[in-house]
Length: 352
Image (cartoon, rainbow, N blue to C red; front, side, top):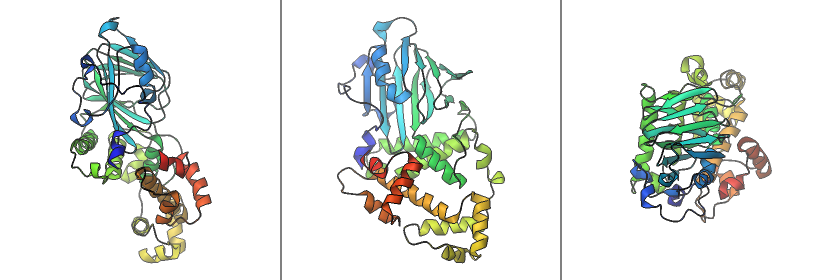
């Protein structure tokens, strides 16, 4: 398990094995990322090539024309579905991104300032004003000579699964955050604290995270804190006052969670909360927009995906083992449903 902390699944680290040249040493690099250099480049075209998997296809221009002073480096760690990174340019630079990846990105200048253009919106970013660019759109990043960026990248599938679970229903459409993220707002303290926890767990060799414990919970906390800190098209649905769930439905969900790996009969679930099957089915449909059976299936899929993603290479764990662990008997149906939900097969998740 500890090996997963040093591997970025989506970033190409080939041909970047050489130690970064001394003059490319990033400024203000967080200690937790100090041992995790991914690439270093002293040519703008090379920097764009290495950074393509992080930002998508883009071009890097040296703003003041001083190519001799240019350098770029990236440090990053993938926990499971959340990448913590640090992107640094040694000169003022313009980064023109054709199309951002589909994952959720949060970019925070660690020092200095940047001007970020997302669509028609222009945001002046600083250590207290982050940017959450819209996935799949173009972006222009104008960095001053002092700017280096903390970058948090969250796997889009994992984010959608987590949001779907918070809402208790499938998502009718993709999430879109407001691009300008004020880190001084009271709500943003949750997000700041989540990042501090992740960095602390990565830095301490004796931490639970390095022992393979708690990474899922930490990542979920980071995703939840972003959802509740930054306005989006789902903010109203996430507010308790606008998305009431009856106590019987909450209790039924708790019962399901405690017995997810066992056989779950709808009649037994209804009996555990003291209502009829018909009443509970109606309440699930009204409160969570899905049937009890669909809820159980989705939760088993989500727990299976987490175990597949966390399985250490060479541990001998199979898809069958994990499916059985969560009460999934029909492997063929599981594979089809899993691919429909997550866009890849169970075996692909296990091998990644």
